[in-house]
Length: 74
Image 1 (tube, rainbow, N blue to C red):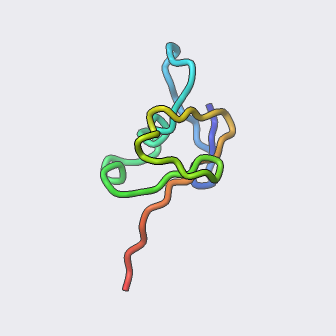
Image 2 (image 1 turned 180 degrees about the vertical axis):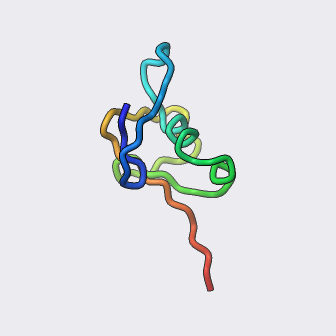
Image 3 (image 1 turned 60 degrees about the vertical axis):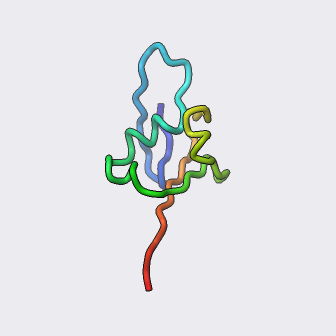
């Protein structure tokens, strides 16, 4: 399945016994381990998705996922 993550085309691999992919699968493949442990926000097709919903929000071919990290500065 091909989706756009932060504007770049990304292929998500999933096993044959899964009927659909969810946001958490895309995040696990896109983010490194350090990034997965930090705070970030996710939007699916411009709609915010809460962390509690990552495992049950399905994604479809061609969807757009935005992963936003907080910016620290001074």
